Length: 92
Image (cartoon, rainbow, N blue to C red):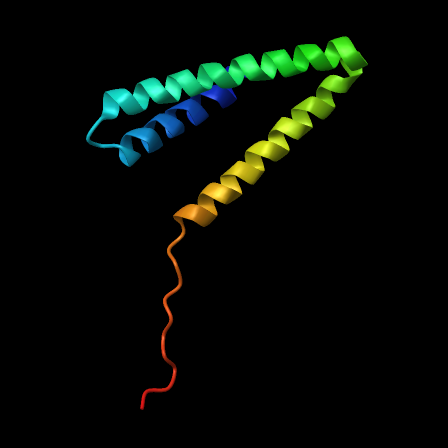
């Protein structure tokens, strides 16, 4: 897991600092806080899933979290993409 976790963590850190260059310490603290929140939520949801449906339900929970992450990445990409400009094809 560590080999996959560290590059993602470093990429998210660089993105946060690039997004808020005037307050890199604040961006860093928010990133770490939300990372810890994600670990807590994932652990709680996984625990509830195991308690309710057994250990065989954990891959489905993992799949749901992965799908939710992909949806969030797509939303982020749509929000950050430049808006298309209305170009006039015909000039009078």
